Length: 213
Image 1 (cartoon, helix red, strand yellow):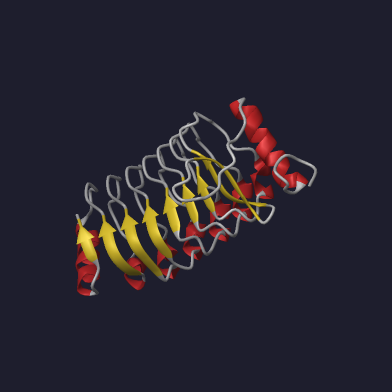
Image 2: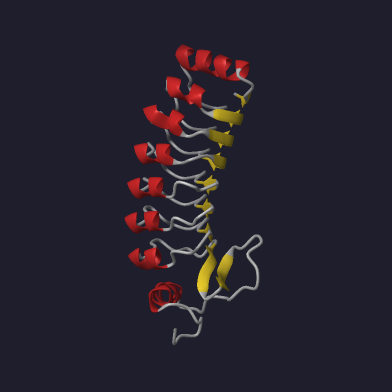
């Protein structure tokens, strides 16, 4: 742990690569809170990490080294893709990717089964990987303002989604399995939903879901 952060060499290598990309030192923070830019070290490991609004276009594959990170903010950048290795960050509870140029989400995202807050709004997603259906349950799943046309057929494997934002997409149909999810609030306004989708929404309402569309 012979580095300025007092963390493993693998973790330090990732942070060094980020500093090289930014051409500046990462701030070391005392608390996570609403972390936006910097890193918080907990028990000699990276706990929280943020690169909000830093104009970065790529994340190095070495991100897999910060395996203990549980909170990550990468919003408001120029990211088009994420490395597959992000799926190795299995301790992640919160991942914020809004306001990028993401065209796809890696299949490995499904390996982060216990994620609770996932914000991917305001990107260029046309579809979602089937692997998201591996999530156990999500507190806040925000997919608003993308270009999605459909959801994976097996999305009903997710036990619950408290706040599910699908607004401002191009969704025409919904899989029947969405009825198997315990959804508290569904935002699905500004989508060209067909009649079958509207009937599914009626069923969701009957099950107690608050729907905005």
